[in-house]
Length: 202
Ligand SMILES: [Fe+2]
Image (cartoon, rainbow, N blue to C red; front, side, top):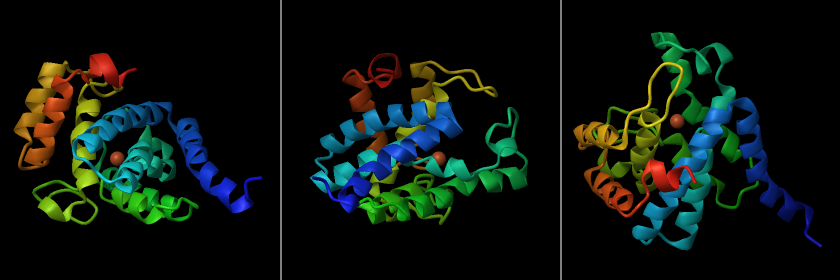
């Protein structure tokens, strides 16, 4: 029989995914797509089993903190005002706090990835303005995939772009927002058949 603690540890993660889905179905599907590619890239980088597991969970829950963002901000169809943008940015810290309250065995690693998943390579990201290799590698992976998926997805305030357009946009952000090495690996992974049109949606 599974002990209560073990069962809690096992259940903490799907429960959060279900909560995220109830809050915003788009975010849930986005996170599923991002996770599929993140694991592929993590394998290419030969991450350890535990690092890969943290990346897998964090990539599915990286936006779980959006549970704590007000409706009028999270679902606003137009551009966010400066104070609304500050509230939206706080989702990475809400997410870190939520993960730390779970029974996940690797919760400190997962929480750290969630906290830093919007840090930019040149230090212009949030919440801590980390730069270069100060940013956990899993976050540098997530940033490329997250941006690609956002660009190629239709939202109330934007039309989806094609794969080619998305790659051009990402290329222009290499060295500023994106880690050059992670972009290069992402390009190879995509070239091997993981375009949004093929694997990501599946
Ligand atoms: Fe996010």
